[in-house]
Image (cartoon, rainbow, N blue to C red; front, side, top):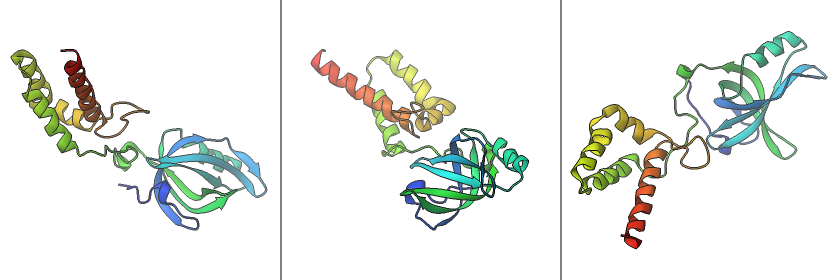
Length: 189
């Protein structure tokens, strides 16, 4: 299994890398003085960086590599970090598309700054404080007794992007909504 070794934010010029990245977008194959090339925008949970694959004079070979990857796929790259127009980029020497089972599921998703176990404990305290026994039992069935839902709820993001789009985001967002409602109840009982 491939592991993420160094985050984009920590890449330094002249660093040789062998790491995994997600493809954000790709530019078409284009001619250059020594053959054919294409450019990619690579990402991880800390940012994005341009990558350039300088291929051979064999257009079909370069196009085959280009066609083997798609936006949002994960690739293993061997290359070197360099500077171009005051921006870091990766010169790609080798690239291999990966399957979902080749890398950790959450390699490119951030995590909540709060500990999941602490947030879950807070949720249990909120459920325990509910006076209506029917509602309390319903929430216990969902968030305590159902192992599958409980574990998914604790680790799932709340959104694809913008807010709470990280591991533990749904739990964190739920607790924030509860806090808003508790404040509202204080103002308008």
